[in-house]
Amino acid sequence: MSEDEVTALPTPIQGDADWRSYRAFRLKNGVTCLAVHDKESKTTGMSCLVNVGAAADPRELSGLAHFCEHMCFLGSEKYPGENEYKRFLSNHGGRSNASTSMHVTNYKCEVLADHAEHAFDIFSNFFVAPLFTLSGTSREVNAIDSENSKNLTNDSRRRLQILKALADPDHYYSKFSTGNAITLDTEKNLEWIREALLAFHRKHYQPPNMTVVLAGPQSLDTLQHWMVERYSKIPNRMNEEKKEKTEIEKLIDQAAFEAPPNSLEHPPPPFHSAFTPKQQGGNWPFLLTTKPLKSMRKLVLLWPIPSNDNRQPDQSASNILSHLLGHEGPGSVFAVLQD
Image 1 (cartoon, one colour):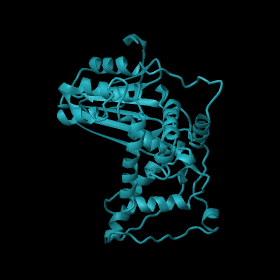
Image 2: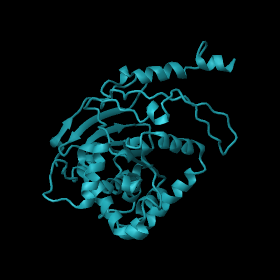
Image 3: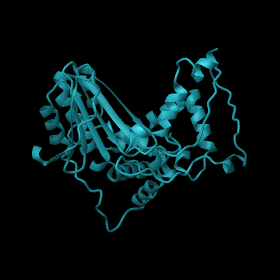
C-alpha cells in the first residue's frame, strides 16, 4: 500500500502545554493509526488496541481472549522465536505489557529510539501472522493459570469475582475473564483449543478493529511510513462469509453476539444491567460484606448506570458525576469525611 492510500483523520485536540505533534489517519484496510512526534523523548512507544475482550469469550472456553493476548507474543511467521520480542526489548532498554478487559485488548511496549523500527517490525507481526504453535499453546496455559492463582490472594480481584457471581448469569459481565488450566484444559483438548485461538484471532483481529499508536522522536513522515508498510499487510476479511463453518467457528460467532458493540462510530447499546433487584432476592439496596485477606477497611458503593455515548466524551454524565464525587477540595465529600 502506498502512502497516498491512507485517509487523513481529524488531528487530536491538544492542550496549550502539549509540545507534541500528531497525525491521525486510516489505512485502506481499516486500521486506524496515530503518529506522535515527541522531540523530547529518548524512547519510542507503540501500542495496538484490538476492539475485542473477554465479553466475546465462549462460555465453554473462559479466558480465551486473555489466552489469545498471551499467545500473540510467542512468535510470528517472520520472527518465530518465542522469546525474540522480549529479548530484543531487554537488550535495548525496552519493556512491554498487555491487558485484556471485557471490551478491548491492548498491547504496548517502548524501546530506545535508535532500535524502534526493528522492535516495531517484531511487534506488528504479532497481528500480521502469529504462529500459535501447539507447543506454545500447551505451555502458555501455565502462565494463564499462574496469573489466576495470584489473583486468588488479591482482595480487589476476589471482590470482582464475587460481583461476577452476583450478576445475571446470562449477561456477558458474569464471564470468568482470566481463565485457568481448568477452563483452558490443553492436556485434554490441546488441538481443539489451538483451533479456537486461531478462529478467535481470525474473527476479531481484523483491521477495522485495530487502533495503532506510534510515538517517538522520529518525524511524523517516518512514523507513518513504518505503520503503513507493516499494518497494510493485514487483509480485511471482516465481511467475508465462509460457505461452511467449523463447529468452533460457530461457537466463536455465537459468543461474539453476546458482546455489546464498542465503537466510537455507533451509539451505545440499549441499557441492560448485569445487576437487577431480581438477582439479589428482590430487594435493593443490599449490603455485601467480604472478609479481606489483608488488614483493611473499605467501603465500595456501586450503581448500575447506562453506558456513556463515546461519540461525545466531553458530555459524559458519568465523568461529571465522578469528578464531583471525587473532588477533594473544601466542601467536598472527601473533606467532610476527613473531618
